[in-house]
Image (cartoon, rainbow, N blue to C red; front, side, top):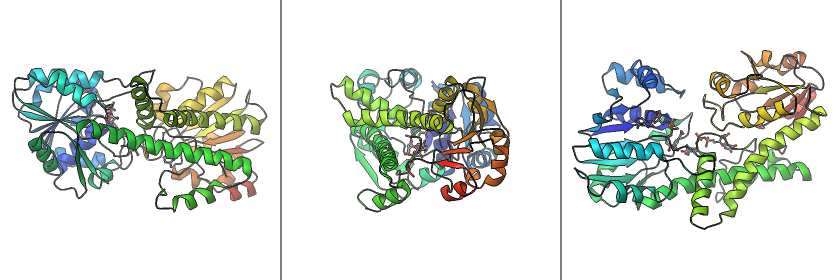
Length: 428
Ligand SMILES: NC(=O)C1=CN([C@@H]2O[C@H](COP(=O)(O)OP(=O)(O)OC[C@H]3O[C@@H](n4cnc5c(N)ncnc54)[C@H](O)[C@@H]3O)[C@@H](O)[C@H]2O)C=CC1
Ligand SMILES: O=C(O)[C@H]1O[C@H](OP(=O)(O)OP(=O)(O)OC[C@H]2O[C@@H](n3ccc(=O)[nH]c3=O)[C@H](O)[C@@H]2O)[C@H](O)[C@@H](O)[C@@H]1O
């Protein structure tokens, strides 16, 4: 099939490469000329294991193309939208990129097509687009909601092996065409109304965020009653009705989607006159989890003023250079405000973090230099290299009282205590 994908962010680029790799004729459309130049050279603007290689292979085999002009969509069987839907400060979803593209599309399209919404948009958006933009177009444009569930760091695997494919629409022929798009993927395909498909995406992210905030609350309680979350969480998760995934306690969820989608769904609820209390609590617990970490450091160091804290890990999770809504970005400014000195290290995300963190943060080239002279280490992202660190050597680089706050429960507590550290985890 001939497919245009608009927006070469994370999702758009993965979709473009994966669809081209599946044999579709794909053109990726991006308005940011810097990104476009990189893409044409075979360089991904984001880090994702295996994506650079796939992009280069597709370019060398002439199986992928990029354009900055939206007119390139003409002749496509499917036009897929993967532009950003960021949160506004009040939590409302900023749909300006989506509406901007849709209003341009209806002007330039001169061949019938199917508009497939990959971006995460609040329930009701698709119906509103159909009413406002797709009623009296020059050529017929069908609308399909097709939310994406991939995770950063394993995006290609998630694309090819999804748990389900959700197709929301009411045009049978368009639904069949979109099913063909995923013809090589072996997964259940669920067809439903447009608004239900949009809700599936928000409900899924909100539920996963709820699991994380729930286990964080249990971990906080474990600390008070003397239980160990490492023993509790796996045993709880073994109940197949609960499931073992997303029960890792830590500094709370970050990333480009859970924070914005939970706030976005809460905004929709308020707007519709519904008080989604549980969701509000999930968001509040997530914020508090960062603050609790700062307070733990403050107690362990007997105040933060004049103390040196080393931060290991800046990305919102390992395997990515993405720092959007990362716990480190909330915690570091709090430490600075309390008068601490901060050094930081991340194997991939330093350059991205440097652009947004205050200038007084010092960045190290390796974990040992980061730890040098620090009284406390906060492990904020569970990169494997941190668990494999020579902690004995690390201790010789630190100063008393040798505090480790393991914000991801990724380190060997007993071993670190044996080496003379004051170890603190989350609920262990
Ligand atoms: N990042 C992720 O892991 C996932 C994201 N999503 C959803 O996918 C959507 C996209 O997310 P990201 O890829 O992270 O977004 P992003 O914000 O990183 O990228 C969006 C891209 O669209 C481009 N763009 C905006 N307007 C354009 C226009 N008129 N013409 C051409 N290009 C245009 C921007 O320049 C940018 O490169 C969001 O709705 C997000 O919620 C869904 C699942 C996973
Ligand atoms: O809508 C999206 O953008 C995507 O959001 C998440 O994917 P992603 O943000 O890439 O990352 P996750 O692996 O889900 O982790 C999100 C955050 O939760 C945290 N987390 C995750 C699991 C856990 O048990 N505990 C925990 O604190 C991670 O550290 C990370 O900060 C979802 O997992 C995807 O299904 C979804 O498509």
